[in-house]
Picture (tube, rainbow over the protein chains, first blue to last red):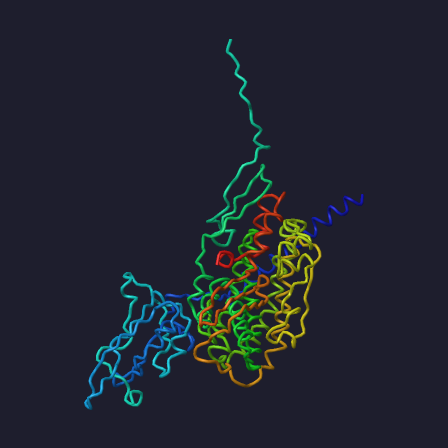
Length: 160
Length: 375
């Protein structure tokens, strides 16, 4: 008699446990306002990333096409996987002194791990995080970027 | 009349045969190959083959400076990335005898616990999916998203943050950070009840996990099974409690120990741990002191020659970092004692004699992350 009783109570508890779980799923089924899914490609226009979002490394330029990079190469040594190459040019100043200025700041996005050491180590705050995150391209060469814009020059008060 | 030939008939049921579970198998959570020796569907023995995602992180550390190592330890156990980084940072600070500001200690502890909850949430959803409940997967990921949003707002990335740096933090926390954490705790206290209703009490899940895959306390110690898996067997191994770092000594939390050591106990340990982590967060989040977010460090960090060891409690167990320095800016040798590798070594012992379907449940309850095993 006792074993039959436990047999049926076990069945009762089993069914009850399944119904408790189904209560949870049923509640979400009847409350569609709790849906959290983002309709990603459709909401592209309104999608805003957080300010600190690490999308890619960029070099901000001001309205006169001036950046803050001196071409010292500290970011190149700080980078753990060689995704930054700084190429310098030697120019002769009017007073006869030779000076190194930046020619190309090459950034390999394909090798970047977004650790942020280049931005942190930069003494003149020339680099920053960009918010762009759709990096997929068909050609690998497109992932190698030159961060200083063509024809840009260094900001006066940084150069001095 | 036909001649009857009596061929020697092999009894298939008694013959042992080997099958490969993995390297591409949804329940191994990565590229882990288990060569399972089966008799019928009973597991006789099991041999894990590692190395499919070996990247040589220990070797790569030897060419990196100490701040650069941080971005590699992120990629070992990617689900507890902050905690891995904490170990390296603590080691460098211990070797250089740097006092980090109190604010850094508080933030690190809070972020570690958030990371632990996020890791256990992902474990819960993948464990539910291993047992055949796809609903768990969606609910778990939905709640984990709340933590990832907090991370993204404050540190800029969702999975691999590289947020700690020897001597402090890369940047200060976002002004919304404290509010976000408080909102999350309020939200998750409600949602964790759903977890219990959906999976913990479920009769199918209980019958499949209770009494399956038992590891005794002695075996857990001898195999070095740590973390929630070890505590399920009664092995008191919580580094946060026994060798406190950060501000864990100021927080009031329990080290919950199990007795049974079976799959269900390992499951329950993680459910308890999520609640304990929320308790730690509630105590610390309002008390973050003001101050600097990083101590003053030299531009080039050089560790004095010698050997150093530091351990922390990662989401899956005890993570140890061992460094031999020859006084240069890069380590001479770096070794990680990863929790998943030791936990995996006990899998053969645990799963002898179980059915092959239970092997999936045992693997899910040990919660191994393959990149941490292979490094």
